[in-house]
Length: 151
Image 1 (tube, rainbow, N blue to C red):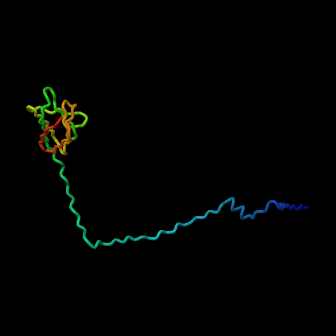
Image 2: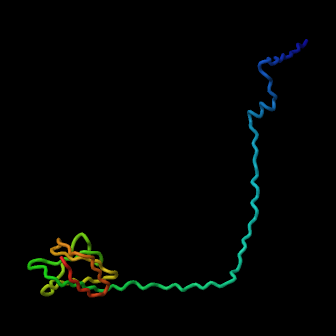
Image 3: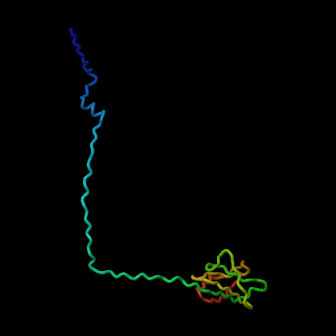
C-alpha cells in the first residue's frame, strides 16, 4: 500500500504580502539593456574656389648683422695717476665692472670694441668709482665716437 504525501503550503501572514515571482526574479538578475548608438550622419566638405587671386609677397631672408669694430674716445683730464674706465651694455661691457680705457695722449683716452653688431650704451668712470654725470652715451656699430664727459 502506498502512502500519499502531500505537502502543506503555509499561507502568508497578513503582515507580509506575497511578492510575485517575476518581481523576485528581477531583483536577482537585473535585465541588461544595450542601446545601439545612432549612426552619425555623413558629412561632406564643400570647398569653394576663391573668386580672386591673392598676391603673396616673396619671402626675403634678412642678412645677419655685420660685426664691425667700434671706437670710443674721451677727451678729459682725469689727473695724474688716475685711469678712465667704461661700463655699459654691449660688446664685452657690463654695468657691474668697468674696463680700463687706454691713454693715447694728453687728456685723451680710447677703447676699441671688436665684433659689435648692436648699439653700445655706456658711461665713463674715473678709477672705476666716480661716475660721469648726465645721460648715458650711445655708440652705433662701426662708428668712432668722441665724448667729453663731465664729473
